[in-house]
Length: 339
View 1 (cartoon, rainbow, N blue to C red):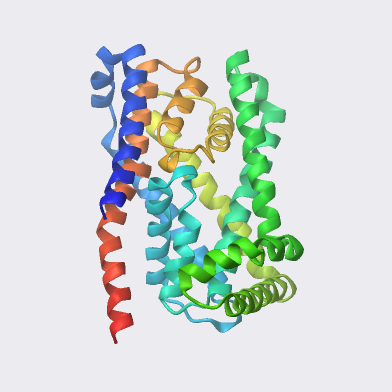
View 2: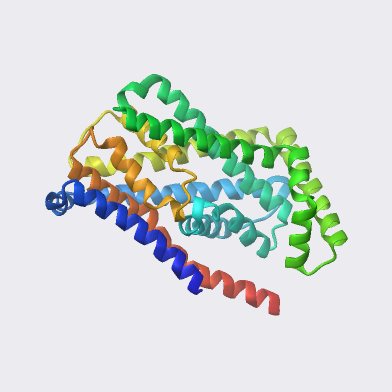
């Protein structure tokens, strides 16, 4: 629990620290005045948009888990989405989200193969669409959103790093040979053996069986559920559009009007640049990248005010919600083990 609180505190400090640094060098005298101009109706719309995003993400989980007749409650999927966002927000590289979602589903009697398949397909679908969208939008609007050499270096370096990580996860999720080599390696088998306190041969056999079932589920999903995959793609596109539009909505709430297409392009590219930043929930990097991306497009006080309200909705609110839900989840798991 102490380690968890430390991670949360680090993420908040980095986020607030970067926002404060931007404010110090930017427009600290006028930020409070800018915040006071926020249209509360539009702020409520931004909050509702994020809630819709959470519900859409939970629907994606339920649809993928329900393939082949698996019965999973929507409430469990909603809880899983919030906990995934929460653990991403407090772990370096935002790496804890998907593993914890799988853990949460497994502890709620969803087979690990099915849990891994659903979360893996969701993750790679979202990342594939965001990366391809970033490069596509850069082709059409790159010169308008990358204003100087410093921004260009930041953008292209970040995209290269994100694409490298993306290729690794793509192989891990879809390549049978690559995945078997990783998970059946002697080192990982020994580590799992010590963690589970089981014989290495038993762990190896269990791993092979689980991977076989996992790839059979993937094959079944591809061969028998193409309409479901198409629906997943449509929902993913909707989800991405909703989350990327929230900062734009907030800027409108501050009385700023801009080209929506260019803003969408800039925020998508910025998201990909900081996607695998090695801080909890990309805290610090998101705020800094947002400022770098939009500093020549909007007044500085509006940029900082937008960052504050945006992160309030998409970061701090999730930390609060996750902190409220997590103890109940662990209590339910403990009670299940005792019964």
